[in-house]
Figure 1: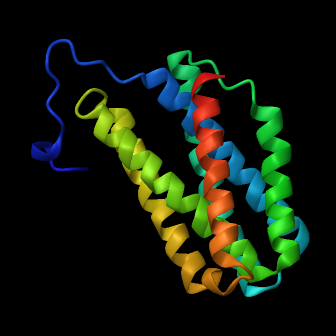
Figure 2: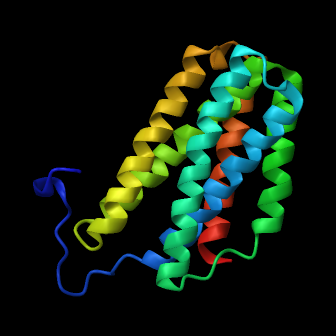
Length: 184
């Protein structure tokens, strides 16, 4: 867990973090990640080195999603109504990047995890000491996402065709999905 001396001080009148929005967007993001990996595995199969790494990362995302599904139920949080869109968009993104090749599939992972790392870090800062249980979950999942990013880079993400463009577009899409899922 983060050093408490690093937690932001909350002053009277400071806005409280919108914890329901945080949970909603995190559950949506973990769902989207499972769909991206499902699309990649549908194309890559299960025998290549990339597919083995993706399968391992997908299992972790399944665990993250299961935990956020529990949190949504426990706390009575309304999930995003955009889930059917994230289902199709996530699967399509995974499948298309895998069709380009294993490096592009890894580039997709690296781009997504870059944004998720930033997103989770921003949430942890906003939470401060407001909800230690949620913060602990987010911090643990952020470490998994960082590991996914590092795996993707090690497995050739930056060698994907048009990597900077692909990465930028995927990151932009992630930012849009995060913003939309917080509210809708």
